[in-house]
Image 1 (cartoon, rainbow, N blue to C red):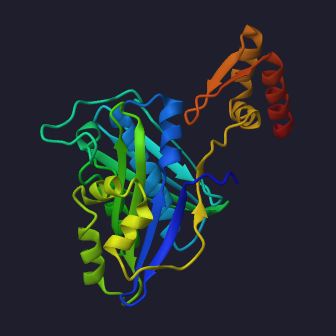
Image 2: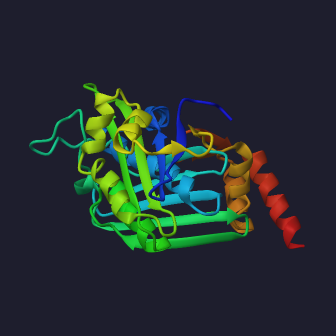
Amino acid sequence: MDMSRDAVHSWLVRSHGVVIAAADTTATCQEAQRLHDLGSTASIALGRLLTATALVSAVQKRRGLLSLQIVGRGQLRQVFADMTDDGYLRGYVRNPHIGFPLVPGEDPTLRIRVGHAIAPGSCSMIREPGRADFVQSTSDLVSGEVDHDVESAVRVSDQIVTSLTCEVLLDDKLAVRHAAGVILQPLPHGDVASLETIAAKLRDGELAKRLLAKGGDVLAVLRDVAPGAEPVEEPRAIAWKCRCSVDRVRGALRMLTAHDLSDMIAKGDPVEVTCDFCGTVYTMGRDDMQAAHDELIASQN
């Protein structure tokens, strides 16, 4: 895969039985902002969800495709992200150009709240460890702040103590400057009090302050807040990559009815399909629609 500087690092506080995963997702979030021309609020919301997806994937028991979706009644409406077992992330925001003014008292270089652009609503998590196997869970949003909501969803779904903090810091031009996150869970019989002590050093904007002070180096932050932690496996590279293709679009055509395809062929107008994840536009001509029609008819005989 493309070995960008983005990665998930798995660490362990062995003496207290606390598992920690830390992710640097800066390049991934910058690419998401570029592809979708995201406003500041949308950049933070999607960046947090992309980071959360990478971190939840790192601690789940069975590897495989993980999807997280937040649907709310705020102006962002929907934020979606998924990650493959190969470490490829992608996502989108239904209203990508949203950029609200700061809440009074907020520092534009630190944690910026986005809950008012999302909540109320729900968070859904779909895990697909196998091609014919998936597990879905849905929970109500607790704040709309994305990392808080995913943390709650994991706690409800897995029935395990979890602390998740994700940050997307913007520069003075509202471009993504740093993006990173940390998730903590106890091993069986691990010390939950020690976990909470570490988590308290990251919550309520503390991770943002530490990231800014460390130039975005999430591992330097981790060494400060959990000096007893040590790496337990090689870093897992992650990167933005969309899975759309002409073949997938042709496959989508085959999901239409023969009648619908016949009507489209008769009209003769090309059909444009735009990928939600990367904005690529695919144009399906009459020959494509005829091939889909013929394959559909053959499959029914």
